[in-house]
Structures are given as C-alpha cells and as structure tokens.
Image (cartoon, rainbow, N blue to C red):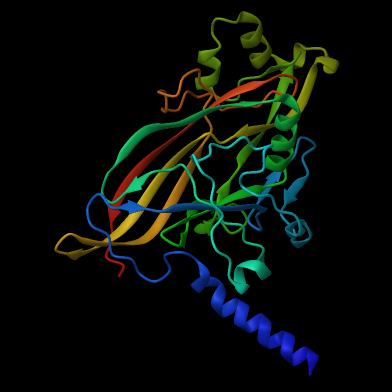
Length: 292
C-alpha cells in the first residue's frame, strides 16, 4: 500500500513538474514586452565529459547529482537584480529540488541587444578555487525563459553527433603543457600572439630541449562571463508572438572592460591566489521559427 502511495506521488510530481514552471502555459507577447528570464540551481550534468591533466576520462555520474548550489550562493558572485525574489514552489519543484529566482537579465520581445553590461564582480581567491573545482566537476547553469529551459548546442565525441541539452556550462576545461609556469601555445594563432616573447616561441618549437622538471601538464578551468542568448519565436500575426525555444552560448573572455565582448583569444582563468575582477555581459538575438 505504502509503495503504491509513493508511486502515485512520484507520478504526480513528474506530471506536474513541468506545469509548475512559470510561463509554461503559452504566453502571447507583443513587440517590446518583457520576457522573464529566471535562474535555477546549478547542477552537475550527465553530458559532462573531458580528460583531466593525467589523461583520465572524466564524466558526470549520478552520484554527483546529490549536490547542487543555489544560483545566488555568495561564492559565485553572480550579478543580482535589485531585489532577489524566490519564485513560488509546487510539489514537483520541491521534490526535484528546484530553487528558482528572478534575474537581472532584461529580455524584450524582438529587441536585440549587443554586449549589455550586467555588473563587475570581485571574486576572492578562495571563491575562485570553489568555482574552478565545480567547473572541473562539470557543473551546469540552468535558466528558464518564459518557462522553457535554456538549451545548449553541443557535440558528443562518443557518438559523434550534435545534440541540444538543457542547461549550459559554468565554465570549460582545457589541458595544456606549461614550461616554467607559462602555457605552451597549442595553435599557430596562439604562437603568433606570443611572438614578442622569444623564450615562449623557443619552448613551443623545441619542447624536448627543456628540462623535464620544468614541463608540466595542467588542467585549466575557464570561467564563463558572457552569454549569447538566442530566443526562438513563433509569429502568430497582428504583433502576437510566442517563445518556442531558447539557446544560450556561454563564452569565457578575459578583458579589462565590460564593453569588449568579442572573443579575445584568451579565456578567463580565475586566479586562486588573489582577487579577480570579472565583467559579466550578455547579448540577445531573436530568430523566427515555424514551431507552434
């Protein structure tokens, strides 16, 4: 009997989870109307996979799903709206651990935006270490736009196929060789950008001539601080529109001002030994869709 009751509760939660999300009932917007962008907790992803500095394949596993973090956990130092408001919870939200809040992102129907500054945040070294650890563990951000989960286009190297997965990376990882603490350029573009440093060029071309104890393989975590948001909409005529999909392309950019959103070639690495000044920005694009 008890088993049947719990099964019914589980089924109810599964069916109502989607309906608890704000905006799930189709919302009709007019040009310029505000579209809500809400943020949910950060979680590990089952799609996460990469190689660490020792060459081991690392991927997400279900045990890590026991852990999640509120979006506005103070150690992330994400930009906040003037008043942070937690969204109403349903039974499904409670059971699945959703913790949904409003956000400072401003989306308006058909109003495209480029390189909008959100805020400048100072991330201490101890919090940088916390963030870097989560990046290496494959944690994802989870957003909702008009009740629809933001997706990320990705490539699965195991199946060699593209797919759309819910959520997007807190950051990315890269494994590189360093010589005496300096990264060895891995591409001609990087090599050219370092042309002013003769020693680096020499090390890159002749790594075998470097003393073994100076060469190290390290796993570098890149923190995402820019978001390209693509909103797919359906035109119902007479200035009536509905949101039918959302794609977020997360970007990591090292920069000294919020007005620079083009890729610099240098992703942002948070230093765990000092304070880090981080500029957060976003861009918005609208794409018409035949999806109803």
